[in-house]
Image (cartoon, rainbow, N blue to C red; front, side, top):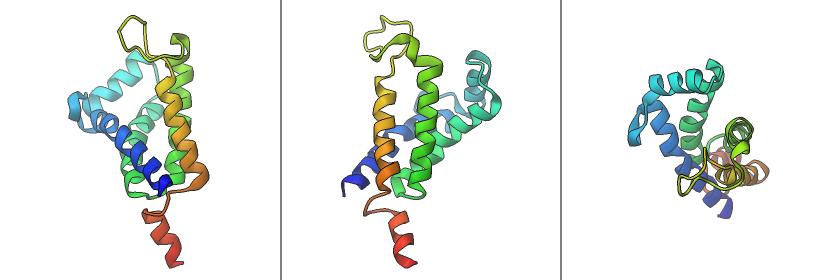
Length: 137
């Protein structure tokens, strides 16, 4: 049950970020605005920007339902390592809680990576589509 909780928690926490980027929900820019921001302001290649949007949106939904969880967990590990090394490392460990830093630290990203590694190592947990599929074989 604990692995299912980890998987669903990660999916539910990341989903609003993906919905901002793809659909413009929760005050986000939507697909076009996010692609513009990631490629022009952050100088990411288009394929990387596209991958970030798809991983956050479809990966979070897949984690919540427990479909291909190890794949999505590995995707999150890679994506958040990239975030740490491209934008957060220079700002230190702590998040920018009080707005007195030039950017966000990497503590949130480490939490995401830790949960994703748990899913990667242990799988989707008892309550998942992955488990249903594996029991039918």
